[in-house]
Image (cartoon, protein in one colour):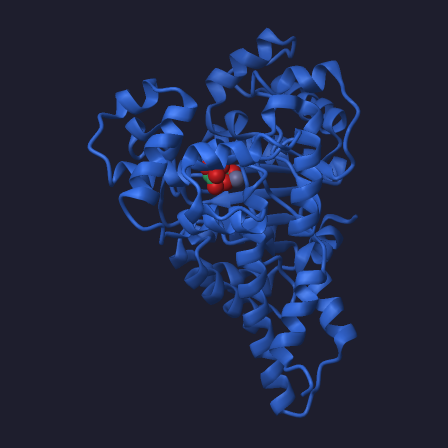
Length: 410
Ligand code: RAT
Ligand code: ZN
């Protein structure tokens, strides 16, 4: 029996190396910043917020515990006392499964022993090989006190780990960041005069060069509007966009995150809101010389984003971000994008914070993207257009990072 279209697409997508365009992973040379192993998987903030729904422990008791105790609380709440059916729980199962570890036959202590047999270097190779990930884009923040010293000291880069300059504090917390910049020798003032603008641009240029950044990125709250009489809006117009033009950087905006909806959950406490995409429309229309990479957190923003991308070729939608990284929504969003944009978008990024998560995030997403794409080829075939394996290979490479690289001008 010849292979069906769906079987061909699944086979080819699985064999296509992915360039993961947004993660929170670090170059192995940055030591402990690169997280891996079962405890780190369990204290992933996606799981922490779910576990609090099943525990009556006071928040402070959880946060006062050690990392491995916290992992134990999560394991007990979500895997022992309840069934691991959520997407984040299923992710732990898939990742263990792809490492050849049967979570059913192991308690947490036994799971930990499985991980003790790998060195970090071996584990990186094992995960990148199994997940078929060719390159990983980090999220690099000069404002992060743990990360910055690595860049300042310099280190031998692993070419598979590429950099992206993350600038949230600059844009969303200007007065504080102004003081921070001044302490580091940049002649800036809260007032955003000419001298300050050029000094902040010098700061961005310094870091873009230092980390060899691929693009510059920020996450934005639902309240974001552009243009507006605000520091944020002025910093984008007068600092970020000219910087991006001068240094050939795309500007990535992750739109619609409401930070600290429940601060007691710490990093797990962020929520979602509807973003104002008419601001994005104005940015794309008024800055044809800039390139915008955009993902939206709200399901309700997805259709408008896709329609905007049809109008502006300087806009590249990417990923099913965070709360939209669930099978049902990936399927819906990817199908909608294929139907309105063809293959001119990047369906997914992993957002992995723990190396092991590359295993599940890519296995789950690849299979859903394959289903959506196969359905489109089936419909083309029904109209007399039989897709060839070479064409499927071309399209798969495009979707798994090739189109993104071209959009970046690389
Ligand atoms: O998905 C996540 O892990 C979030 O915490 C955020 O980091 C988000 O992806 C972001 O980059 O802001
Ligand atoms: Zn992220």
